[in-house]
Length: 191
Image 1: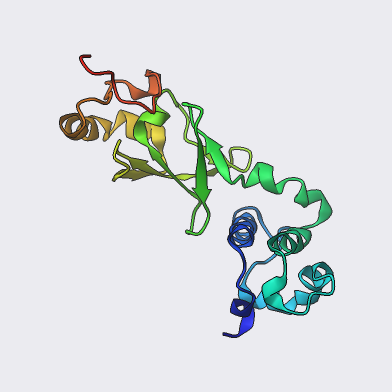
Image 2: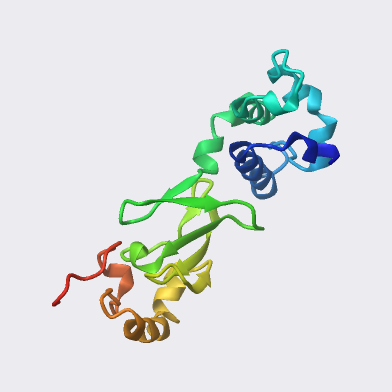
């Protein structure tokens, strides 16, 4: 191992790094660069102040990596990280679904029934940047990828609904999902 890989960043720090990298890509150079080379060049800025005398990298607390990465963002932007690039998205059912930032675009993988009633496409960064939706069946299998939920409801939903209704008869498949009640449950037996 060499370079940044020697640090073996904990999961929480990896996720923050992905979110910060996405903010730079999506919102501009005011956000810190998160490439391996950039982080290696700035070790003195983001890692050394948080080591607190620890000489063995395997003993560095996970929170030190997180705080160090967060400190790379200017003070006025640090307070906006969680608002602009949240770790989770609240869907109409009330469930809080994790957003994955490791892809080219932030991805939300969610069962399609949990989005019923949603008339606008889910977005982050104050609504400026749409999430890529991986719409899932009740069994959490992929059924559609979209960056235009209203277009999906008015377009290919009817074909998806016809196919899924046969596979999952105990789940709702409304004709107008944009105006249907969201659900995370199957219909009760006998209905």
